[in-house]
Image (cartoon, rainbow, N blue to C red; front, top):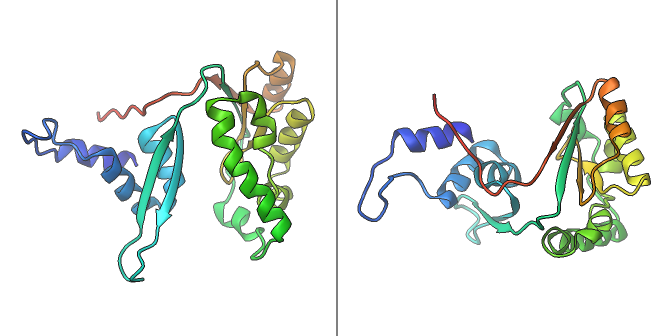
Length: 208
């Protein structure tokens, strides 16, 4: 994503309609997702803030897919806490443990939470705990992400809306109240890096 943004800035061709000459956000998302392979990752990195992304598959079956994204307003009371274990998760390993088929019941469960999450993020943060429940990837990845799973479960059992960030290993908490400092101190003492921040609405890219 950084490379696409840098190339856009360096190869800018200003016009009266586009004084900066830079690529549009939509074009940046398309290019970055084409290279990175995951529009959710690329769109979040390009746009920042709350994002919903999707892939439009051409009906002709031959044209390249189109990657799209729109922003979701985030309630100002929501704060972000990230607990980052001191290891890198193998994307290959965490994908390998996912089943090729899931039950209709579990699929329906996750679809309802996916629909609930934008509502929780924008208007009803009190629903974040319920909106971040999952049956499709976190249970299967528990054995390859034991530290991550331990902290997600501990935090959720204490009422914090926590979940695995992407394929892991980072643990994310979206809440309107701060996480207990004693709990964060324990995480640090066990080698996890702790970041406490808010939700930005843009991404800053510096080319040096």
